[in-house]
Amino acid sequence: MKRVLQGIDVSNWQGTVDWAGHAEAGVAFAFAKATEGGDYTDKWFARNWNGMRESWIVCGAYHFARPKGDPIEQARHFLNVIRSAGGLRRGDLIALDLEDDDGLRPERVARHARRWCHHVERHTGVRPFIYTFQAFAHGGNCAGLAEYPLWLASPHSPRGRPPVPRPWRDWTIHQYASSPVDRNVFHGTRQELTRLGFDPR
Image 1: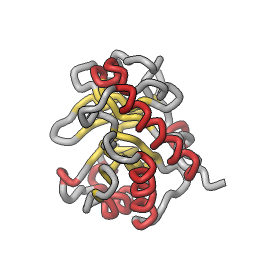
Image 2: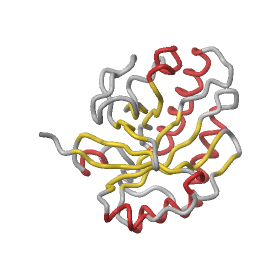
Image 3: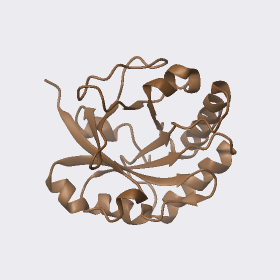
Image 4: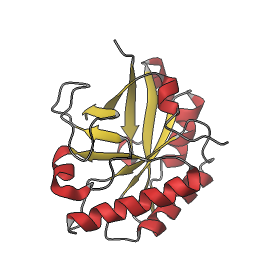
């Protein structure tokens, strides 16, 4: 039986997060919202980023995509916010939250996501996770993103057994519950997870 790591994800909606308490309860990794669009910064991000780090939780930061805006401007904003919170260290994870089409056609949404990911990958060496849900991916909004690990929101599926939408063949993180906090699982070890993250070499 493969090892399963427990994770959570948070944003400003959670307010103050008790990171030490989560770590004690077995949370091994977490994602905190950093930015949205080209200029919004989550006011709790720096505190969450440092709280995860202090509790030895694998740190992840995510950006909420606004496909109507400029993907490069949004990627730069995201990276600047991480930098001002203390920057990336070995094993830190990055994700793009792709769940709103801003009223655009799927190919425009997918192109926005690809350009954002390419910029972030070029500047950090990290391949971002794509956070999305089945219906959004089925609509074609994730075309060309199969090379990026899938973080799938599927709270109605049994934990660790969500149906995987195209273009992916498999999921990497499954968000299986959303209350009182979003809960996630990763199939594998901490080492396998941090291999998907930042490597300063």
